[in-house]
Length: 324
Image (cartoon, rainbow, N blue to C red; front, side, top):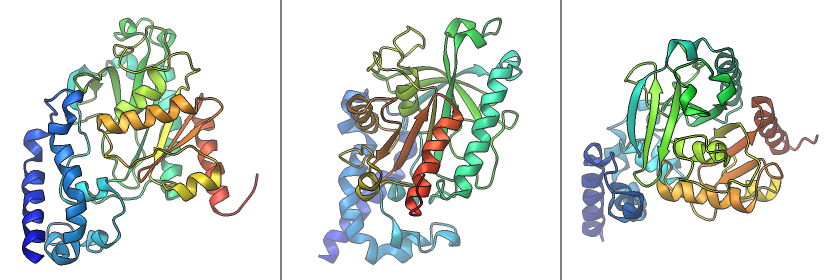
């Protein structure tokens, strides 16, 4: 009934409006069922029923460029962002600035430059569309190993994970000096917390940091503060990961012979991490190099930026019906 739909819509709005007070995820990962994001999950179905009746009301809350977006939303995350919800859903603890010696490190500079070029290519290829919050979807990461951190303030951390910051403006090439890269020095799965260094306090690590950490830092060498938080240490671990918001359906997976997660999940949540871990455990690298997160996008990994990008280029060629 209209009354029931209105009530459901009001309840969802109340939950979403409370988001700024709940996004610290104070509950440990095991208590996800009590969090704001679980409540959102429960009400998304009701929200979809309400959309035809409240579309104009919701559109007034967004810039005109998104006026028709509600009519084409396909994922839970799009609903969340459209309603003003956050991207980052884990607790963050900034432990300092990126040291000057690290910013001047040739390995760091070189890999950051390669990754920046890769993200520009991804965006031009349509793999990083603008999402309802006005920023593009997609991110990337690489690891800097201990031998490249000698004589720097990060030497004691061993291997570190470098990720893109949360929220990339469209048509912007990421750069170190502009704060587009964040160094993750620890991930605590139980507290659902990321420890990081950045250029300024304004930057946060990408919302997919837990997934990137799991994909690249579980090498079983004892490097990385959160090494025991995630498993599959016996596998050969890639060093670069690239994520884009394309190729997210079962049809895409079937066409390309790629593993796909069973369920759609909100990104940046414990269940999202579990879904990716199930894929990488069942289909380990290097036999498999691309994983599809249902309703979210692809996750390409490699030993180099070029390898990870070549995986994506192959997908694009297949999508166009090309071979080779």
